[in-house]
Image 1 (cartoon, rainbow, N blue to C red):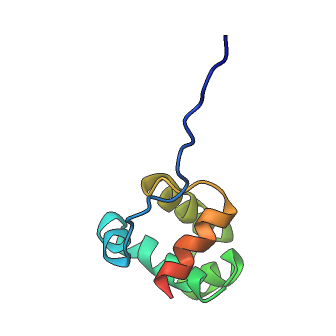
Image 2 (cartoon, one colour):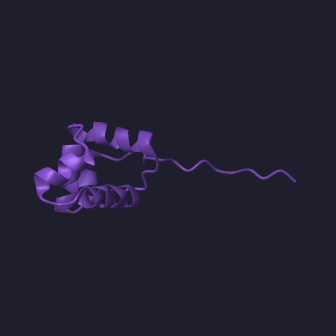
Length: 82
């Protein structure tokens, strides 16, 4: 018996900048906007007065909230915010 798997989209196709902002907290938005400027987690942490690990945790939370999996999909999300 052959099983067929449905491919799960890594980024919702109709996701807009407005939807991203509506679904995230102010802190997450600030981190996303800094990440969209190609800042590292360390740079983001230094700028916001949080640890590098906290910045990384916020990025992971955003990915989970928006159903974005993988680095390529996250980069597409950041490109949407530029």
